[in-house]
Length: 136
Image (cartoon, rainbow, N blue to C red; front, side, top):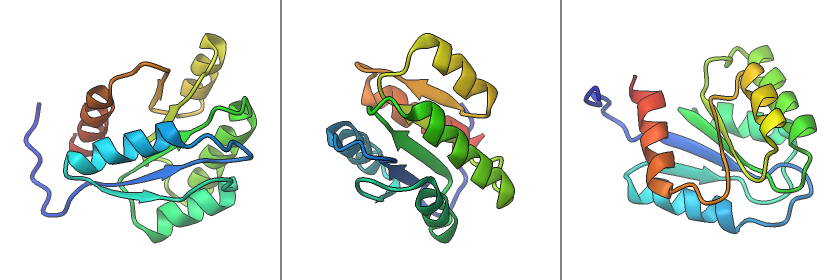
């Protein structure tokens, strides 16, 4: 692994799009990233794709994590990816967590999602993924 030569901590936005009201997983991931020395901006529940992208740009984050359990991932995540591209942030790593069917994982990866994490993924795996994405 390449040593991180950044002066500032990695900044990650964690977001809960749509009507999904289950935020425990998002909070667990946010805590793990904070414990690893990252700055985490948690947007809270019921965010629109537009709100998520606006927050990511305003906060100048290095990565975006989307937590979604509602089943609306194939409507909401593509919209987030589209908005990021439109705003010139197509290279911003986006990762998704939730219960995502295998066929949908492939589709999300095709549109640019860097990684999809399913139930039972260790927080250490997510931390290492974010570090690798941001540090090179």
